[in-house]
Each structure stands twice: as C-alpha cells, then as structure tokens.
Image (cartoon, rainbow, N blue to C red):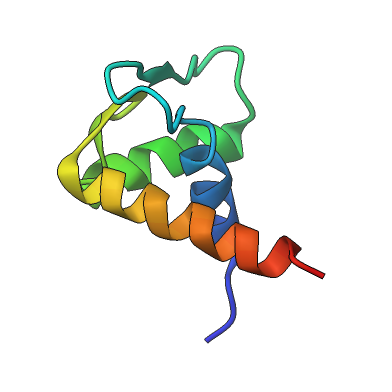
Amino acid sequence: MPFSDDHLAELNLLTQFRASSLQEGIKVHSHEANPALVAAAERLHVKGLITHRDGGYLTDLGIETVDHTRKLLGILANE
C-alpha cells in the first residue's frame, strides 16, 4: 500500500514536533494554515497521536510514532 497524500501530510506534521522536548507542543491555526495541514492535525487527533484537533502535545502513541517516523526518514535520506 503506497503512502497517500493524507499519510504524507500527517507524517510531515509529526516531524514538526521537537524531538528534544516532549513538553513542547504545536498549534495549527485553522485560519492561517494550509487546509491539508489542518485536516492532518484533525486525523492525528482522532487516531490518538496528538492531544488536540489543532495540535497540542504528542500522546504516548504519538511519541512512538514520531520516533518511527524519524527513523524512517533517516533511512530514506541515507544515500
């Protein structure tokens, strides 16, 4: 199954969370952000990866997912 545009938007949003601080969240401003980013945040919230529909903090599952996402990016970026 290939990554869909929705999957890529969600992965890109997850990479915006700082790996160095779990106490720092993000805010997706619906009136300013790209609609695809707003929708990605809402989907991540429904999936239980972030605490609020417009960002917030990573949940435990979100932390694990970001870790996997960063590892995958590292593998793909290694040439």
